[in-house]
Amino acid sequence: MQELKNELKKVLSEIVYEYRNKQNKSITTISNEIGLPKSIWSDLEKGIKDPQLTTIWKIAEALNIPLSQLIKDIENRISKDFSFIERI
Image (cartoon, rainbow, N blue to C red; front, side, top):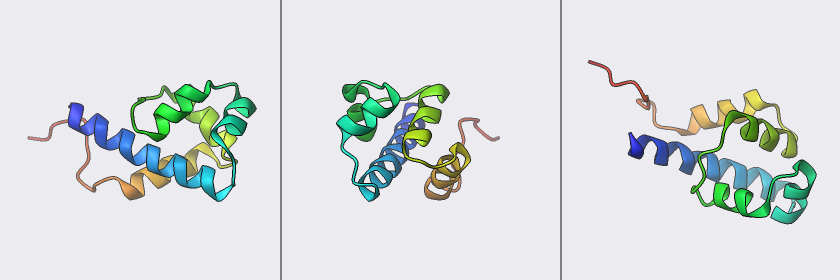
């Protein structure tokens, strides 16, 4: 289970980093825009944090993308057989 969480955090961190850099926003700027501590944003981009849905929603807003787009980006990048439910 931890491997799956780590894979998901890694994919999210890569996507968030890419969007932020495309917009030429610093971690400080984007953190201030949504009231998220810089340390949390930094940990998210390093793949350390496993954010709650409310935090992911704030991140999407800060990146000026719909939450659904962020989720689609994750789905497109994560391995096709990814699932938290073990299939028999």
